[in-house]
View 1: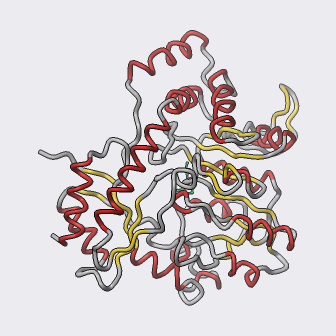
View 2: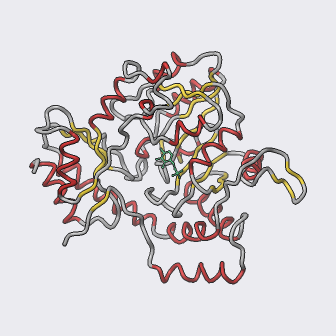
View 3: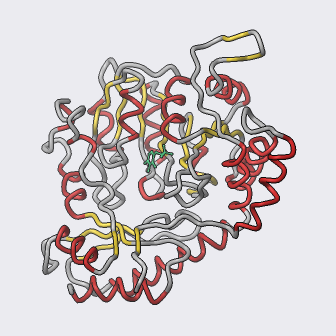
Length: 369
Ligand SMILES: *Cc1c(COP(=O)(O)O)cnc(C)c1O
């Protein structure tokens, strides 16, 4: 029996390599609260990612909520409907109204040319997403933000290790938030982080994620519990050792899909990127009317072969009941995102996916059976 294939499978280093890390935790009995592995992982990630400061979190959703708190964002925030629902939920949890703007048809990232028309007197920030790890048009977004006095928080959940023209894409905007969830390129079971550029902000964020404690007896803000535990941090350190190989393997699979699907009528791949500007975290295809069956029929066909793809991002965030009443949530305001949501299909991509399985998936998509 063939094993089912999911859209992703977490990278798991050999268990015996993890045991020494666990023994250290058992020996020193420090399980959380910024212990030695937490500190080591922060340091290692700053170096690996090429960023100044990083604060580890229990997950990216709490990190997004905390990032908004750290910058005291309120009122309205301009964001994209084409993302995982946590992007907009982090705004809701802060009592902020999301204002959705449409995406670019080529990159599927927030269209910067739509931002200015969405700014009102209540707008305080922009929250774009580096969708599938492909960098947003960061220069344009930063420029608009500067001109209009807005903060920028990037949901960089997909953008681990991604660079743009001037080094890490995580150095753009005021803050960037990473996710280390099991389904992401780099995982700590559950986890996330906020990337920032100055020491004072890093201290402020560390303070916010630990209930607002600055010392044993002093609480300065209504903080939250967002700390990453030691087992997760240790797992991250171990996984970092093989991340280059993991991303190279993903790159190879990306190349196989592009070649294999190039001549398939009605299937479009997103523009090719290189190993600097991509981490190959997803392999999205757009299935249009020229394909012999609908996107959902292809999704089901693959499922019949025990290949479980995902329609990231369908449905659009703006269609969920807590958002669909917003004026910016209408399909007329979001035609490109609406079309992408109806055409998108993310094919399986992860280091342990074999060439044989990739070829099999290409065969099914090409033949429609
Ligand atoms: C995964 C993801 C999140 C949430 O990350 P968690 O670590 O699971 O909380 C937020 N935004 C985007 C775009 C994501 O893909």
